[in-house]
Image 1 (cartoon, rainbow, N blue to C red):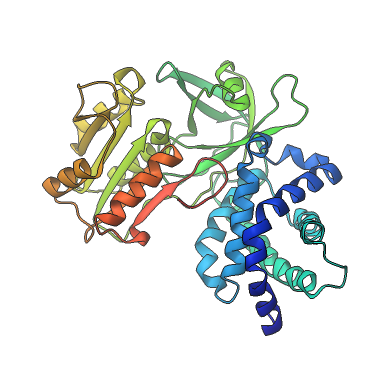
Image 2 (cartoon, one colour):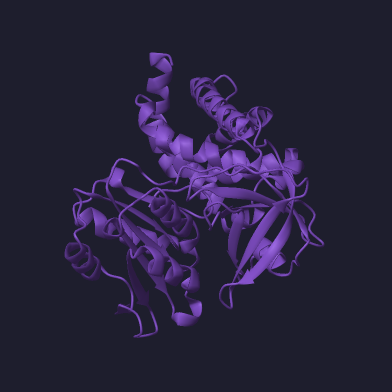
Length: 390
Protein backbone atom coordinates (compact mmCIF):
# COMPACT_ATOMS: atom_id res chain seq x y z
CA UNK A 1 0.00 0.00 0.00
CA UNK A 2 1.30 3.46 -0.86
CA UNK A 3 2.68 5.52 2.03
CA UNK A 4 0.34 8.39 1.12
CA UNK A 5 -2.65 6.04 1.30
CA UNK A 6 -1.59 4.84 4.74
CA UNK A 7 -1.33 8.40 6.02
CA UNK A 8 -4.74 9.37 4.64
CA UNK A 9 -6.41 6.28 6.13
CA UNK A 10 -4.84 6.99 9.52
CA UNK A 11 -6.09 10.58 9.33
CA UNK A 12 -9.68 9.31 9.00
CA UNK A 13 -9.59 7.45 12.34
CA UNK A 14 -11.20 10.33 14.32
CA UNK A 15 -13.96 10.57 11.73
CA UNK A 16 -14.60 6.83 11.93
CA UNK A 17 -14.69 7.00 15.72
CA UNK A 18 -17.35 9.69 15.48
CA UNK A 19 -19.34 8.58 12.44
CA UNK A 20 -18.44 4.91 11.92
CA UNK A 21 -21.75 3.50 13.10
CA UNK A 22 -23.71 5.95 10.94
CA UNK A 23 -21.59 4.94 7.93
CA UNK A 24 -22.25 1.23 8.39
CA UNK A 25 -25.97 1.83 9.00
CA UNK A 26 -26.18 3.73 5.70
CA UNK A 27 -24.06 1.07 4.02
CA UNK A 28 -26.37 -1.81 4.95
CA UNK A 29 -29.49 0.16 4.07
CA UNK A 30 -28.04 0.95 0.65
CA UNK A 31 -26.75 -2.60 0.10
CA UNK A 32 -30.14 -4.24 0.65
CA UNK A 33 -32.01 -1.67 -1.44
CA UNK A 34 -29.66 -2.08 -4.39
CA UNK A 35 -29.07 -5.83 -4.01
CA UNK A 36 -32.05 -7.33 -2.13
CA UNK A 37 -31.06 -10.92 -2.98
CA UNK A 38 -28.22 -10.57 -0.46
CA UNK A 39 -30.87 -10.92 2.24
CA UNK A 40 -30.57 -14.65 1.47
CA UNK A 41 -27.02 -14.52 2.85
CA UNK A 42 -27.08 -11.98 5.67
CA UNK A 43 -28.68 -12.70 9.03
CA UNK A 44 -31.49 -10.16 8.95
CA UNK A 45 -32.24 -10.72 12.65
CA UNK A 46 -28.76 -9.37 13.46
CA UNK A 47 -29.47 -6.50 11.08
CA UNK A 48 -32.62 -5.66 13.03
CA UNK A 49 -30.72 -5.60 16.32
CA UNK A 50 -27.93 -3.49 14.87
CA UNK A 51 -25.33 -6.12 15.83
CA UNK A 52 -23.96 -6.57 12.31
CA UNK A 53 -23.64 -2.84 11.72
CA UNK A 54 -21.84 -2.41 15.05
CA UNK A 55 -19.46 -5.28 14.26
CA UNK A 56 -18.64 -3.85 10.82
CA UNK A 57 -18.09 -0.38 12.27
CA UNK A 58 -15.64 -1.83 14.79
CA UNK A 59 -13.88 -3.79 12.03
CA UNK A 60 -13.49 -0.78 9.74
CA UNK A 61 -12.11 1.29 12.62
CA UNK A 62 -9.68 -1.49 13.61
CA UNK A 63 -8.48 -1.72 10.00
CA UNK A 64 -7.81 2.03 9.89
CA UNK A 65 -6.03 1.98 13.24
CA UNK A 66 -3.80 -0.91 12.12
CA UNK A 67 -3.38 0.10 8.48
CA UNK A 68 0.40 0.20 8.89
CA UNK A 69 0.44 -3.16 10.68
CA UNK A 70 -2.21 -5.25 8.93
CA UNK A 71 -0.49 -8.47 10.02
CA UNK A 72 -1.91 -7.84 13.51
CA UNK A 73 -5.41 -8.30 12.08
CA UNK A 74 -4.78 -11.67 10.38
CA UNK A 75 -6.27 -13.81 13.20
CA UNK A 76 -9.47 -11.76 12.97
CA UNK A 77 -9.42 -11.99 9.17
CA UNK A 78 -9.10 -15.77 9.41
CA UNK A 79 -12.05 -16.02 11.80
CA UNK A 80 -14.26 -13.83 9.59
CA UNK A 81 -13.19 -15.66 6.42
CA UNK A 82 -14.40 -18.95 7.92
CA UNK A 83 -17.70 -17.27 8.87
CA UNK A 84 -18.03 -15.98 5.29
CA UNK A 85 -17.60 -19.45 3.81
CA UNK A 86 -20.35 -20.79 6.08
CA UNK A 87 -22.62 -18.16 4.51
CA UNK A 88 -21.59 -18.86 0.93
CA UNK A 89 -19.89 -15.50 0.34
CA UNK A 90 -18.31 -15.35 -3.13
CA UNK A 91 -15.72 -13.03 -4.78
CA UNK A 92 -18.43 -11.23 -6.79
CA UNK A 93 -20.00 -9.99 -3.55
CA UNK A 94 -16.95 -7.90 -2.67
CA UNK A 95 -17.49 -5.51 -5.57
CA UNK A 96 -21.05 -4.87 -4.40
CA UNK A 97 -19.98 -4.35 -0.81
CA UNK A 98 -17.09 -2.07 -1.77
CA UNK A 99 -19.27 0.12 -3.97
CA UNK A 100 -21.90 0.57 -1.26
CA UNK A 101 -19.37 1.10 1.53
CA UNK A 102 -17.51 3.84 -0.34
CA UNK A 103 -20.83 5.46 -1.23
CA UNK A 104 -21.82 5.40 2.45
CA UNK A 105 -18.53 7.02 3.49
CA UNK A 106 -19.01 9.72 0.87
CA UNK A 107 -22.63 10.34 1.87
CA UNK A 108 -22.12 10.52 5.64
CA UNK A 109 -18.95 12.64 5.45
CA UNK A 110 -20.28 14.82 2.55
CA UNK A 111 -17.17 14.27 0.42
CA UNK A 112 -16.84 15.29 -3.24
CA UNK A 113 -16.23 12.55 -5.81
CA UNK A 114 -12.53 13.31 -6.15
CA UNK A 115 -11.72 13.56 -2.44
CA UNK A 116 -8.39 11.86 -1.56
CA UNK A 117 -10.03 9.96 1.32
CA UNK A 118 -12.30 8.11 -1.12
CA UNK A 119 -9.37 7.20 -3.34
CA UNK A 120 -7.36 6.00 -0.35
CA UNK A 121 -10.24 3.96 1.08
CA UNK A 122 -10.89 2.36 -2.34
CA UNK A 123 -7.28 1.18 -2.43
CA UNK A 124 -7.38 0.00 1.20
CA UNK A 125 -10.71 -1.76 0.71
CA UNK A 126 -9.55 -3.78 -2.28
CA UNK A 127 -6.31 -4.74 -0.58
CA UNK A 128 -8.28 -6.25 2.30
CA UNK A 129 -10.95 -7.68 -0.01
CA UNK A 130 -8.27 -9.56 -1.96
CA UNK A 131 -6.97 -11.01 1.32
CA UNK A 132 -10.47 -12.26 2.16
CA UNK A 133 -11.12 -13.58 -1.35
CA UNK A 134 -7.90 -15.61 -1.35
CA UNK A 135 -8.43 -16.89 2.19
CA UNK A 136 -11.99 -17.97 1.41
CA UNK A 137 -10.91 -19.58 -1.87
CA UNK A 138 -8.48 -21.74 0.10
CA UNK A 139 -11.13 -22.68 2.69
CA UNK A 140 -13.63 -23.68 -0.01
CA UNK A 141 -10.91 -25.69 -1.80
CA UNK A 142 -9.78 -27.48 1.34
CA UNK A 143 -13.40 -28.32 2.26
CA UNK A 144 -14.04 -29.79 -1.18
CA UNK A 145 -10.82 -31.79 -1.34
CA UNK A 146 -11.41 -33.62 1.93
CA UNK A 147 -12.72 -37.16 1.69
CA UNK A 148 -16.49 -36.75 1.66
CA UNK A 149 -16.08 -32.97 1.44
CA UNK A 150 -18.00 -30.46 -0.61
CA UNK A 151 -18.19 -26.78 -1.51
CA UNK A 152 -21.40 -24.76 -1.48
CA UNK A 153 -24.65 -26.06 -0.06
CA UNK A 154 -25.32 -29.79 0.15
CA UNK A 155 -28.67 -31.37 0.94
CA UNK A 156 -29.13 -33.33 4.17
CA UNK A 157 -32.05 -34.80 6.07
CA UNK A 158 -32.72 -35.03 9.78
CA UNK A 159 -31.96 -38.60 10.80
CA UNK A 160 -32.65 -38.27 14.53
CA UNK A 161 -33.89 -35.68 17.05
CA UNK A 162 -33.07 -35.86 20.76
CA UNK A 163 -34.57 -33.65 23.49
CA UNK A 164 -31.62 -32.52 25.61
CA UNK A 165 -33.50 -30.09 27.91
CA UNK A 166 -36.91 -28.38 27.72
CA UNK A 167 -35.28 -25.70 25.52
CA UNK A 168 -32.60 -27.60 23.59
CA UNK A 169 -32.88 -30.28 20.92
CA UNK A 170 -30.10 -32.13 19.11
CA UNK A 171 -30.43 -32.81 15.38
CA UNK A 172 -28.42 -35.55 13.67
CA UNK A 173 -27.97 -35.10 9.90
CA UNK A 174 -27.36 -37.60 7.11
CA UNK A 175 -26.49 -36.67 3.52
CA UNK A 176 -29.41 -36.97 1.11
CA UNK A 177 -27.08 -38.52 -1.48
CA UNK A 178 -26.03 -41.11 1.15
CA UNK A 179 -22.37 -40.38 0.36
CA UNK A 180 -19.74 -39.95 3.07
CA UNK A 181 -19.11 -36.68 4.90
CA UNK A 182 -15.75 -35.23 5.99
CA UNK A 183 -14.19 -35.34 9.41
CA UNK A 184 -14.01 -32.05 11.32
CA UNK A 185 -12.20 -30.56 14.28
CA UNK A 186 -13.95 -30.22 17.63
CA UNK A 187 -15.30 -26.69 18.01
CA UNK A 188 -16.12 -26.16 14.33
CA UNK A 189 -19.58 -25.31 13.00
CA UNK A 190 -21.76 -25.65 9.91
CA UNK A 191 -23.82 -23.09 8.06
CA UNK A 192 -27.45 -24.27 8.09
CA UNK A 193 -29.79 -22.89 5.41
CA UNK A 194 -33.57 -23.23 5.68
CA UNK A 195 -36.61 -21.35 4.46
CA UNK A 196 -39.26 -21.15 7.19
CA UNK A 197 -42.89 -21.06 6.10
CA UNK A 198 -43.85 -17.55 5.06
CA UNK A 199 -40.23 -16.32 4.99
CA UNK A 200 -39.38 -14.14 2.00
CA UNK A 201 -35.74 -15.21 1.96
CA UNK A 202 -33.55 -18.16 2.85
CA UNK A 203 -32.20 -18.00 6.39
CA UNK A 204 -28.64 -19.05 7.18
CA UNK A 205 -27.35 -19.64 10.70
CA UNK A 206 -24.14 -21.15 12.09
CA UNK A 207 -24.44 -23.97 14.62
CA UNK A 208 -21.53 -25.68 16.35
CA UNK A 209 -21.09 -29.39 15.76
CA UNK A 210 -21.70 -30.78 19.21
CA UNK A 211 -20.52 -34.39 18.85
CA UNK A 212 -17.15 -35.51 17.55
CA UNK A 213 -17.47 -37.61 14.42
CA UNK A 214 -21.17 -36.92 13.77
CA UNK A 215 -23.01 -34.09 12.05
CA UNK A 216 -25.00 -33.13 15.12
CA UNK A 217 -26.09 -29.64 16.10
CA UNK A 218 -27.82 -28.80 19.37
CA UNK A 219 -30.17 -25.84 19.19
CA UNK A 220 -31.83 -23.74 21.87
CA UNK A 221 -35.27 -22.40 20.90
CA UNK A 222 -34.86 -18.65 21.36
CA UNK A 223 -37.98 -16.53 22.11
CA UNK A 224 -37.72 -14.61 18.82
CA UNK A 225 -35.52 -17.11 17.00
CA UNK A 226 -36.87 -17.58 13.47
CA UNK A 227 -34.53 -20.44 12.57
CA UNK A 228 -34.20 -22.06 16.00
CA UNK A 229 -37.98 -22.32 16.38
CA UNK A 230 -38.30 -23.56 12.80
CA UNK A 231 -35.81 -26.34 13.56
CA UNK A 232 -37.60 -27.24 16.79
CA UNK A 233 -40.77 -27.77 14.74
CA UNK A 234 -38.99 -30.04 12.24
CA UNK A 235 -39.51 -33.80 12.12
CA UNK A 236 -37.22 -36.70 11.32
CA UNK A 237 -36.85 -36.84 7.55
CA UNK A 238 -37.13 -33.10 6.96
CA UNK A 239 -34.46 -31.58 4.70
CA UNK A 240 -31.92 -28.82 5.32
CA UNK A 241 -28.93 -27.53 3.35
CA UNK A 242 -25.50 -27.37 4.96
CA UNK A 243 -22.19 -25.72 4.19
CA UNK A 244 -19.12 -27.81 4.99
CA UNK A 245 -17.73 -27.73 8.55
CA UNK A 246 -15.49 -24.74 9.19
CA UNK A 247 -14.19 -22.46 11.95
CA UNK A 248 -10.98 -21.67 13.82
CA UNK A 249 -12.19 -22.24 17.39
CA UNK A 250 -10.37 -25.55 17.74
CA UNK A 251 -8.19 -27.48 20.16
CA UNK A 252 -4.67 -26.11 20.58
CA UNK A 253 -2.02 -28.82 20.34
CA UNK A 254 0.91 -26.91 21.89
CA UNK A 255 -0.08 -27.21 25.55
CA UNK A 256 -0.52 -30.23 27.86
CA UNK A 257 -3.60 -29.07 29.80
CA UNK A 258 -6.99 -27.74 28.70
CA UNK A 259 -9.69 -25.84 30.62
CA UNK A 260 -13.17 -25.80 29.03
CA UNK A 261 -15.93 -23.55 30.39
CA UNK A 262 -19.46 -23.74 28.98
CA UNK A 263 -22.32 -21.36 29.65
CA UNK A 264 -25.76 -22.69 28.71
CA UNK A 265 -25.99 -23.76 25.08
CA UNK A 266 -22.39 -22.57 24.68
CA UNK A 267 -21.52 -26.12 25.65
CA UNK A 268 -22.02 -27.22 22.02
CA UNK A 269 -18.48 -26.56 20.69
CA UNK A 270 -16.98 -27.43 24.10
CA UNK A 271 -18.42 -30.93 23.93
CA UNK A 272 -16.83 -31.88 20.63
CA UNK A 273 -13.52 -30.34 21.72
CA UNK A 274 -13.55 -32.36 24.93
CA UNK A 275 -14.26 -35.54 22.98
CA UNK A 276 -11.43 -34.79 20.58
CA UNK A 277 -8.98 -34.19 23.42
CA UNK A 278 -9.96 -37.55 24.91
CA UNK A 279 -9.71 -39.32 21.54
CA UNK A 280 -6.23 -37.87 21.01
CA UNK A 281 -4.98 -39.31 24.28
CA UNK A 282 -5.15 -36.41 26.74
CA UNK A 283 -4.65 -37.62 30.30
CA UNK A 284 -7.65 -37.31 32.67
CA UNK A 285 -5.77 -34.97 35.01
CA UNK A 286 -5.03 -32.65 32.08
CA UNK A 287 -8.68 -31.87 31.33
CA UNK A 288 -10.99 -29.61 33.35
CA UNK A 289 -14.56 -29.17 32.13
CA UNK A 290 -16.69 -26.53 33.88
CA UNK A 291 -20.37 -26.39 32.99
CA UNK A 292 -22.61 -23.49 34.00
CA UNK A 293 -26.40 -23.85 33.85
CA UNK A 294 -29.54 -22.61 35.60
CA UNK A 295 -30.18 -25.97 37.29
CA UNK A 296 -30.20 -29.73 36.64
CA UNK A 297 -33.18 -29.48 34.29
CA UNK A 298 -31.20 -27.10 32.06
CA UNK A 299 -27.93 -29.06 32.18
CA UNK A 300 -27.32 -29.90 28.53
CA UNK A 301 -25.62 -33.24 27.72
CA UNK A 302 -25.67 -34.38 31.33
CA UNK A 303 -25.94 -38.05 30.35
CA UNK A 304 -23.19 -37.75 27.74
CA UNK A 305 -20.89 -36.09 30.26
CA UNK A 306 -21.59 -38.68 32.94
CA UNK A 307 -20.76 -41.46 30.48
CA UNK A 308 -17.56 -39.74 29.34
CA UNK A 309 -16.46 -39.08 32.92
CA UNK A 310 -17.17 -42.67 33.88
CA UNK A 311 -14.99 -43.90 31.02
CA UNK A 312 -12.19 -41.34 31.08
CA UNK A 313 -12.21 -39.67 34.51
CA UNK A 314 -11.49 -36.05 33.55
CA UNK A 315 -12.19 -33.24 36.04
CA UNK A 316 -15.81 -32.06 35.79
CA UNK A 317 -17.24 -29.15 37.78
CA UNK A 318 -20.88 -28.05 37.81
CA UNK A 319 -21.94 -24.49 38.50
CA UNK A 320 -25.72 -24.09 38.95
CA UNK A 321 -27.29 -20.67 39.24
CA UNK A 322 -30.43 -21.85 41.07
CA UNK A 323 -29.44 -25.15 42.65
CA UNK A 324 -27.02 -26.30 45.35
CA UNK A 325 -26.56 -29.79 43.88
CA UNK A 326 -23.45 -28.87 41.88
CA UNK A 327 -19.94 -27.86 42.89
CA UNK A 328 -20.86 -24.19 43.15
CA UNK A 329 -24.15 -22.30 43.42
CA UNK A 330 -24.52 -18.87 41.82
CA UNK A 331 -22.48 -17.20 39.11
CA UNK A 332 -19.01 -18.48 38.43
CA UNK A 333 -16.47 -16.03 39.84
CA UNK A 334 -12.74 -15.54 39.79
CA UNK A 335 -12.15 -16.90 43.30
CA UNK A 336 -13.95 -20.15 42.49
CA UNK A 337 -12.01 -20.55 39.25
CA UNK A 338 -8.72 -19.79 40.98
CA UNK A 339 -9.42 -22.30 43.74
CA UNK A 340 -10.36 -25.08 41.32
CA UNK A 341 -7.49 -24.65 38.89
CA UNK A 342 -4.88 -24.32 41.66
CA UNK A 343 -6.14 -27.43 43.46
CA UNK A 344 -6.10 -29.44 40.21
CA UNK A 345 -2.70 -28.29 38.97
CA UNK A 346 -3.79 -25.93 36.17
CA UNK A 347 -2.10 -22.55 35.72
CA UNK A 348 -1.12 -19.94 33.15
CA UNK A 349 2.12 -21.78 32.41
CA UNK A 350 0.62 -25.13 31.45
CA UNK A 351 -2.98 -24.66 30.25
CA UNK A 352 -5.08 -23.35 27.38
CA UNK A 353 -8.53 -21.92 28.17
CA UNK A 354 -11.63 -22.25 26.00
CA UNK A 355 -15.08 -20.85 26.71
CA UNK A 356 -18.37 -20.27 24.98
CA UNK A 357 -21.70 -18.86 26.11
CA UNK A 358 -23.50 -15.51 26.27
CA UNK A 359 -21.22 -12.62 25.37
CA UNK A 360 -21.48 -11.01 28.82
CA UNK A 361 -20.52 -14.37 30.37
CA UNK A 362 -17.47 -14.64 28.13
CA UNK A 363 -16.41 -11.03 28.69
CA UNK A 364 -16.30 -11.66 32.45
CA UNK A 365 -14.39 -14.93 32.03
CA UNK A 366 -11.92 -13.27 29.69
CA UNK A 367 -11.17 -10.63 32.34
CA UNK A 368 -10.88 -13.26 35.10
CA UNK A 369 -8.27 -15.28 33.23
CA UNK A 370 -6.27 -12.20 32.25
CA UNK A 371 -6.20 -11.25 35.94
CA UNK A 372 -5.07 -14.79 36.78
CA UNK A 373 -2.04 -14.30 34.53
CA UNK A 374 -3.14 -16.10 31.38
CA UNK A 375 -1.87 -14.61 28.12
CA UNK A 376 -4.38 -13.44 25.51
CA UNK A 377 -2.93 -15.99 23.09
CA UNK A 378 -3.91 -18.81 25.49
CA UNK A 379 -7.54 -17.70 25.88
CA UNK A 380 -9.91 -18.89 23.14
CA UNK A 381 -13.62 -18.24 22.67
CA UNK A 382 -16.43 -18.48 20.13
CA UNK A 383 -18.98 -15.72 19.60
CA UNK A 384 -22.42 -16.74 18.33
CA UNK A 385 -23.36 -14.05 15.81
CA UNK A 386 -21.26 -11.25 14.29
CA UNK A 387 -17.56 -11.60 15.00
CA UNK A 388 -16.68 -9.13 17.71
CA UNK A 389 -14.03 -8.90 20.39
CA UNK A 390 -14.74 -9.15 24.10
